[in-house]
Image (cartoon, rainbow, N blue to C red; front, side, top):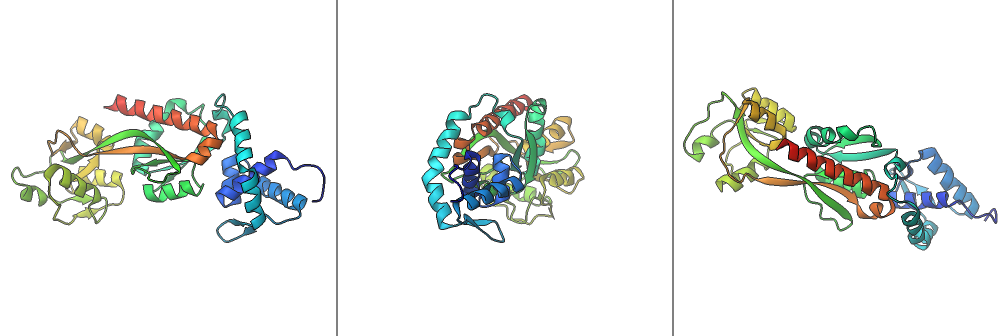
Amino acid sequence: MSSDKRPPIDHLRTLLAVYRAGSFSDAGRRLGISQPTVTNHIGGLEAWLGKDLFARTATGVEPTSYAHHLAAAMGDQIDQIDRIFTTPTGAESAIRRIVIGGPREFVVRAVIPALGPDASTLPALTVHFGQSQELLKELESGKLDLVVSTVRPRHPELTAWPIADEEFWLVAAADYPIPQGSLTQLSAVPMVSYNEGLAIIRRFWNSVFNAEPFFDPAVVIPDLVGVRDAVLAGFGMSVLPSYLIRDEVGSGRLKRIDDAEDPPINTVFLVASTAVLATRPHLRAIASRIVARVKEYQSAAE
């Protein structure tokens, strides 16, 4: 060791963040500090200890055996200090930026509008769009702070709050001719789908008609807003989440074809890392606010 002076606790906290995140940039984002600051903290610790702590790789960093030892020895103590001295009071101001992932359509149509009244008091937001399974993997790796997921997370180290139930409706443009008769006739109507596998449509057909959709999509658009717009333009019918088409159905631009009393429902969740929540109560406070605002927004829209 180069000095008898003890290293600052902030440097030890940075070591623990890099160890858990697997990269300097992700650790900096979690701590709200710049990557150069993270580099300086780790460099200072390595100089003080006289040992390397991380090996740089193409995708991030790998901890050395000594870093494993330090993280195991001090991790619980650092976490406990943060739990004692970081309280929810004034918690939101402790975070400068939140990185949240989610499906484009739901985030744009339901989450962002719901948070509008709180825009001036929330941290800065960075939004990443993507599929739920991939975003949950990024959450586990520390690349995201929160994820809006249309699938229930099964990982034991993730905490999930239900924020909305999306219904699915079978719709077509108001003037689109829909045959009145058998399911076979209905199935002959051109279908606009999110993907080739008819994932959303298949669930609807199974639930409402107790049948498989034995047809191919006429149009495939990997974007639900694009699917909605294609239906409005007269390309055929589709199954879409109610939050995305409620206004169009209410105004008469789209018509519901099904008369299901209990249409298929999917629950949407807000998800965070349980371990991160334990050390960042300010993040839990913001997550709670997002959950409350989205629920209020959804209730007002119904």
